[in-house]
Structures are given as C-alpha cells and as structure tokens.
Image (cartoon, rainbow, N blue to C red; front, side, top):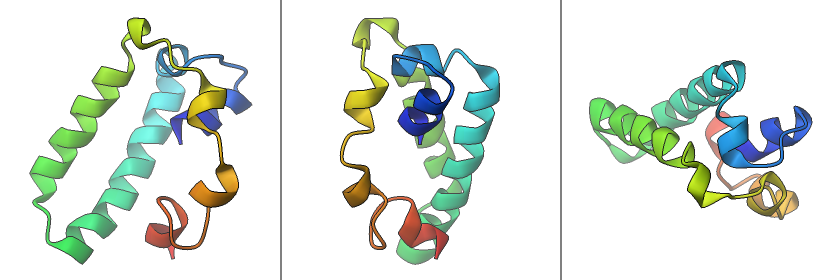
Length: 91
C-alpha cells in the first residue's frame, strides 16, 4: 500500500512516502481495516496488532533503508490477487 500510494504521489522511496502525513493517514487506515480482518479471522489481539502496525510504520520511515517504491511495489498482479494481502481482507 505504501509503495503504490508513494508511486502515485511521485515519491521515489518508502521513507519519502512516509514523510507525507496524508499518505501515512491513508496507509494507517488501510492497515486498520485489513488488520480487523486478521484479528477476526485468526483471533489476534487487536491492541497488539495495532502496536505491530505502528512499530512497522516507524521502522519504514528510516531513510537508511533507502527502499524504492518500485522495488517494494513489484509484482502487483500477485500482490493484488484475490487471495493476497489487500484484496482477500477487503472481500
């Protein structure tokens, strides 16, 4: 999600993307939505999952990772497949 929104916004890296608070808000809301599915489907603890989301969002803001949006967003046909990370929770 971060990579796709970053690419659409003309960002080149994940940390650059996450410096944009508008994108951060969109990503966080998406992760909350897909996370709700994971909590329900697999019995995860909701608070622990939200902490996991926040921890990872902060980690990916690290400029030293220098991870490009095109590398992270690679293979969208697979990643956006019916049984993968974004579409399955949405359906």
